[in-house]
Length: 58
Image (cartoon, rainbow, N blue to C red; front, side, top):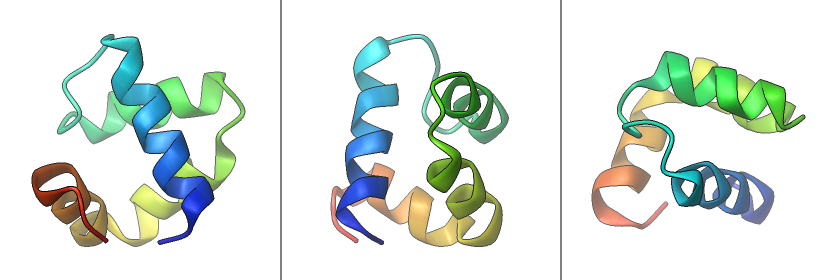
């Protein structure tokens, strides 16, 4: 997981618009903000994404 992905995850979290485990909504919000790296990352590395959400570590 790159620093860019981490920053994008935190930016979505900081909006407070969705539960971060609702990956479809996270991807939608990411797409709307041009966070295409995050959209693809969640699609291809869902376990790593959930691990980061739960534990704050990559």
